[in-house]
Length: 199
Image 1 (cartoon, rainbow, N blue to C red):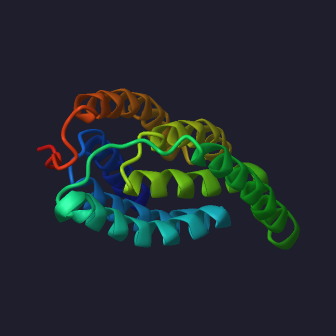
Image 2 (image 1 turned 60 degrees about the horizontal axis):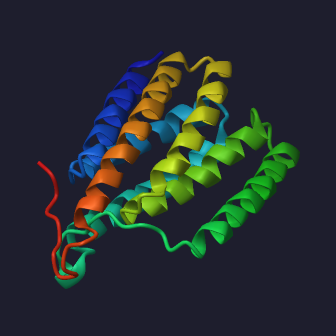
């Protein structure tokens, strides 16, 4: 447990808390978290996670902009669902990318737990992309990621991070329920109506 991990954990908690509330502050706190975890995971030889968090930096910047201006008339975006026809393809792509990245990490690097690490990497990328677009399904992907990540980080001795991801799992379930209520409350609204970011 290091000071940098403590700061990353605090920022990670704040990021998820603000995300559940649809608060724009989820993005700046998330940027701090993912930047710090680049260094944490490099030291732990979790190279897939290093790649993941480098990409996260760009995704956080995009998500920040989309939440502010991605709705109709460049207003704040609201919660929507992924088109049902896209879900099978999204899952198939995620599974194939996981196997490919896991094979590469297992045969070309000294990565720890290459396939579980690849799973959390690919599924986190998909989850983050869906969250950047404010899609309800992002929470299902986060729940799957958190379950696998808890086992990986515990095995690597990152106990504070294990605790954080256990909390993330609970918060992901809460986020799913809250975003579902938000979606239901706006489904019958006129197309031009947009939600402002929650305080």
